[in-house]
Every structure is written in C-alpha cells, then in structure tokens.
Image (cartoon, rainbow, N blue to C red; front, side):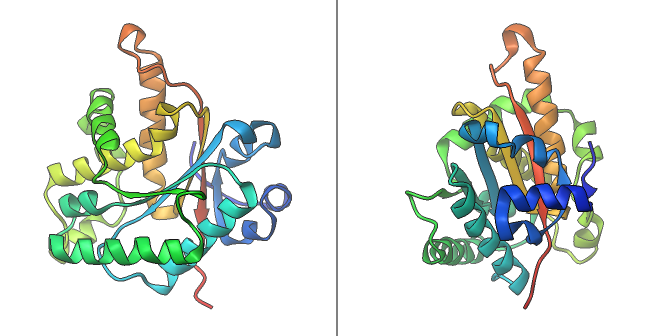
Length: 235
C-alpha cells in the first residue's frame, strides 16, 4: 500500500502511542497496525543513514527523532550507516564514506544510542551480507525498476550515481537490513525513514510475501512491515 499523509485521526492515535515524537512524522504506511500496544513485545524498529556527505541539519533532526522514538517505545532498534551500499550506488571515495560513517556512529552514541539501546552497525556486517544473498532470489529486475529512488536520474545527470548493478546491490543490502528482525524472531517491523526511502519498504514486503509463498524454498519468515516517514525539522 502507498504511504498516506497522516490525517487527524491517525495523528491522534500516533500521539497516543508515540508521545511528542509523533509530530516528526508526515506519512504513514501500515504503521498504526504494527505500533498497536498488543504487538509491542514482537516489534522491532529499523532505520539508517547514508554516509555520502557530512550530516545536514535535516539528517541530525532525523537522528534525534530516532533516539526519541527508541526511548519512548523501548523496543529493539537497528540503526544502519550504509557504507557499502553507498559505495556501490554513489560516486564517493571509500575513505570519505568511512570518515562520515564513523562520525555518524559516534554522534548517535553521543545522543544516547549504544549497545544497550540499539544495534549500531554499517553494511560491513556478515549476517546482513548473507541475508542479502539469500533474499535476491525473490526479487526481479522489474521489481527494482518499479521500486527505486525518485532522484536517480538527477544523481546520474550530476555524475553522482554508481552503476545500475551497484544501485541494485545497494537496495539488496538495505532490504536485508529491514528484514533482519524477522531473521531474529520479530514478527512486526517498523521502518523509519524519509519519504524518499519508502520504496525499500515496498521491496521488503515483496520478499516477505514471496518467501512465505515459496514452499520448501521459504526462509520461514512471517509478519508485517509498517512505515513511518519523517519530516526534517531545521529549527
């Protein structure tokens, strides 16, 4: 289902479930279902950031929102700095990606996200790389053409885009990030991101459904994915 602007009724429910953090969101995609109090024990949150440049005010706002969300809900959270994904999809040197990645990870720790609050990692993580390889069989080239970043053409025009294969690899890594909690026993996942990344939620749902229907080729995952999308606040 497509992400929808948050109407007054949904806003009231989000405020009840998320407290003041709810005002940071502009769009929802099945988030109210996975955020139901009865599902709190089986809920995990996934969010992440691309290290292609130093954090902007908008990125810092999203990071602060992620910290607030974890504190309010108290559920497992995975925060990914997508170094290897960015290496494949953008024309940025590896040394620059590593530098920004480390800055972002350090800043998140300073904000209060650490090993007892959330899993902080990059794409250089063995389990996620294996998971990316396992889910590739459930997605086609047409899936990646239908569900992709809206600014790809703009990046290409400015010489910022990696290869077509690299963009697909980046998407695979990120979809694997989003499906990680199912691999670890969760049955409800909340994707938290900017609206421009909502297509990852769509791809992850395709994998979740197709592997569930794959019989003996299934990965044994079941559950539901909801999406909440941030509005960047610069004040």
